[in-house]
Amino acid sequence: MKELGVRDSKNLTDDKIIAIAKDLLSVVPYSLLICHNDKYNDLQEKGMSQGKIKALLHNRAILNLLQKIEPEKPEAILIDQFAEENTYYKYLAGQKEIHRENVLFSTKGESIHLSVAAASILARYAFVKEMDKLSAAAGFKIPKGAGSQVDVAAAKIIRQSGTDELKK
Image 1 (tube, rainbow, N blue to C red):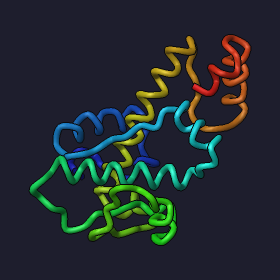
Image 2 (image 1 turned 60 degrees about the vertical axis):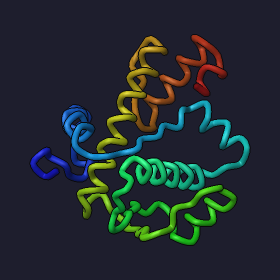
Image 3 (image 1 turned 45 degrees about the vertical axis):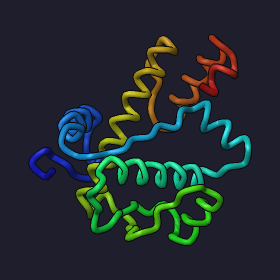
Image 4 (image 1 turned 45 degrees about the horizontal axis):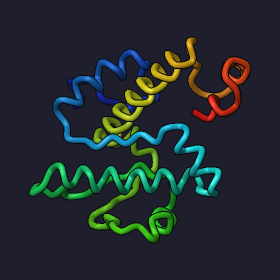
């Protein structure tokens, strides 16, 4: 992975992330889930926190990946910690299937562990591709992140298509 250029994605441009991700997709097993904006907004409107949404997605991705690599079993599963371990599992309460075996949590995981850095690159790659699709649908480049340029783009979408379109 080092030869492919895998490192903390915060130190890579989107173009470099795209190039590395295309290589990673063919050499590492992965499960990539996308929570589209309309689904995310619905979950938030129903009171679900961003942390719970992330926990649900992480658990599902882990279960999917374990199924993909069967009968292989990893020595451990490393989660780039976004919540305390107890909180993570509280978020998953009520799920039919929760993977708990050999799960480790690490803060700043992306800057320490190549596997987390690789996963972050694949996630950013998917994000960039989704933003490109949203931009194409809007008819103009939608900026990433937050700030006045995003507010201007949101206002333009509302003027062109209404608030329902903004939720998408």
